Amino acid sequence: MIQFFKSLYVHNRFFIYISAISALFLLSFWIPALYAATWMLVWLFVIVMCIDVLILYRFKNGFSAKRIVSEKLSNSDDNEVAITLENKYPFQVFISLIDELPVQFQERGFEHAMSLKPGEKSTYTYDVRPVERGEYTFGKVNVFVSSFLQMFSKRYSFSAEESVKVYPSYIQMKKYEFLAMHNNLTEFGMKKIRRIGHTMEFEQIKNYIPGDDVRTINWKATAKRAELMVNQYQDEKSQPIYSIIDLGRVMKMSFEGLKLLDYAINSTLAFSNIALLKNDKAGMLTFSRKVEKIVAASNKKTNLSVINEELYNITTDFSDANFALLYANIKRKINQRSLLILYTNFEHISALKRQLPYLKAIAKKHLLVTVFFENTELDTLITENAEDLQSVYHKTIAEKYAYEKRLMIKELEKNAVHAILTKPQHLSVNVINKYLEFKAKGMI
Image: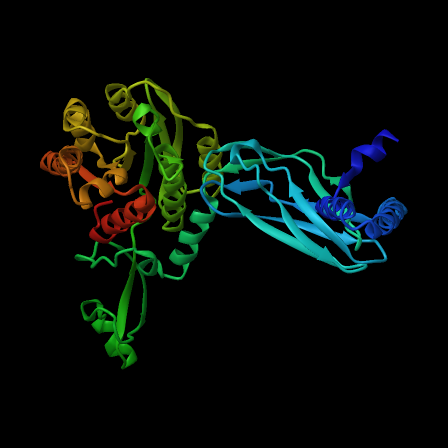
């Protein structure tokens, strides 16, 4: 009996019927003939109520539903969740579907209404966009089923608690991988870099096709085959590449709901995958007050899974990063000249100058690229018209910060440290562009 009352819910139309009957009773005060007719409606209403409850509970398992969600979700991307529905009643039902989403989404208004014919199966899909890594727990799938009378609803609850893990953006990684495999990186904003000289390894001799560099024509093979033949080269392989992520408080800043750390993590995964596709060695290092984790550079495909698992667990703290310790660890543990992609953030040029000696020291032995971020929140202040004194003040300060960011680029380049100043949303594209540029110029 307790379960019966727990599963029985009043439909919204019930209150419409009650309101209509109440209005008729009110009118009967002035029109006495309505009084008896209204009482007949009341008894009819009670009978229909009983019939509605009876047909809903006559079938014990009149409805079924199941949630289908991947074991791993991709951070900052739209991930599809599907719910399969089946009506086992011998009549059309009207349902209200409520899925209990993980608390991280802070979604309290999830509801979807639809109808299903007798025996009909249907699938309802929706997208979720997580902005934090970690474990997410889905609750029950609640389906409120009403008959064609729509006076009461019977609640069905399916699927016990289900936990999924949100990993760095593997959707973004696969997107870049697909474009790289089909040589279509330019379609996604990747620059096509002109190659300077031949700093590549010889691969094979092939027939000339229009568009091949005429400087690669192999005249001996051409004379022997009586047709134009050219040398084909491939990029030098097995170059060590490390992604270095600052876990300090500067990476706590959030843009579009995603922290700078998570932008760096997504970029690291996508970039490491491209590096492995190019047969280079990909590795990773994280640091803050101390060096947290090191994944040695390797060209094994399994190394990407190792990097992914390490990226899943890292988080920022509220301390300042120790660049002196970073330099000491790089000097001791990375012996071969490597490409180092350093993800950090400097908001003031004074902060950069404090760390510049260590960056210069690292750049003497390695090819160092310092990546830091534009504050896109300031763009609105810079572009809008200043109409009062306070607006002028805000705009001036915003322009000062933007100017300092450009000064940092000049300061780093003056000290032989490569730099990327990027909007958080364009991070992965700009980092991969820089990598491809270095490969084309033979710098790694």
